[in-house]
Length: 413
Image (tube, rainbow, N blue to C red; front, side, top):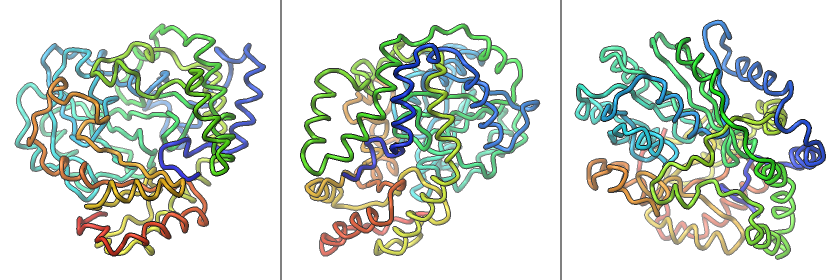
C-alpha cells in the first residue's frame, strides 16, 4: 500500500513508542515532554525564546481559533485568506463572526496572488493568512510582506503543511506561525497544533489559557492509531489490511480528521482542547528524525522531477509534504492507480476542502478565484515520505497512461 493521505509519516518505531504509551496512562496528561517539544521547535525555527513564544493546542484549527480570538478583532472584521485551502483555516474565522475574504492563487507555488490581493483589500481587513501550500514558500512572499507592512496587517504564516525553516524571520510587528501536527502532516502526533508568535501580550494570553484536556478515550484512540495503521499498511496488499481497516472504522477506533459537523461548515468544539503530554511524546520522537525525513522528501521530489514528463518548472530542493502536479485526466489516473493499491491525493479538490462543504455557507462566491477553481479540477498529489522503490512504482503506473496527455502545461516552481 502506497498512500499520500493514509499515515504518510508513520513507521514501526513510532508505532512501538505509541504502543508502550498505551500502558502508561500516568504520562498521558502531564510530563516533561511538553517543555522539550517547545525547545525542539525553537531549535527547528532557529529563533530565540526571548523574541518568540510557543503555545500548543490539540489541533491547528483550535490554535488558529484562539489566536484570532485574542487579537481584539470585531465582528465583521476581514481575514484575507487564499482560496485553495481547507475548512481548518476557514471555520475558526466564521465561528468568531469574522469574515473570510478569499484571494485567488498563482499556479506556481499555489499561494496568494498579490494582484488579486490588492483588489480585495478593504478598510476592514485586519489579518492576512499566508499559506505555504505543500510546504512551498510563496513565490511572491516578499511582495506580500511589503503589502502587510504598508497596511499594518497582522501576519499569520500557515506552515501547517511543512515547517520550512528558511526565510522565517521578518520585521512584521505582529507575526505568527500556525503549525499542525495532524496525522497527514510533515510531523505527526496524530493530533496537535501550535502558534509561534512575536507579540508578547497575545502569546501570554494563549499560554495562560486554561483549556480542558481531551478525554482518556480520545488519547487512547490516538495512541492506538499508529500501531493499527502500521499493521494495515503492512498487510493491505494481501487483503488482511483492508479487513483491519474496515474493522477499525466500524469499531470507531479512528477519530475522524474532519468531523461530520465540520463537513457541514460548523466549527467543532470537540478539538478545542489542550495538548496532552502523551502526544508530545509522539511528536518529540518525530522531531528527532525530522531532518532525515526532510532529506528523504527532497530526494523523492527530485526523483519525480526527473521522471514525470512535461513539467516546465519542476519543484526542486524543497522537502514537500506532497508533490503536486496538474492533469486534465486527474480522476482517471487516481482510479487506475488505486487498482494497484497506490492511493494518490487531491489536495484540494475544492477551493475550500472538503468537497462536501457548502461554499455558499462559508462565504465563497463561485468565479471569484478562477485560478484556484481551475487548479482544484486538475491537482494530483504524490507522496514524498516514501522509498525510492515505492516512488518507482508510482511513476511506473503514471507512465502507463501518458498516452492520454496526462500532464497539463501549467507552470510549477
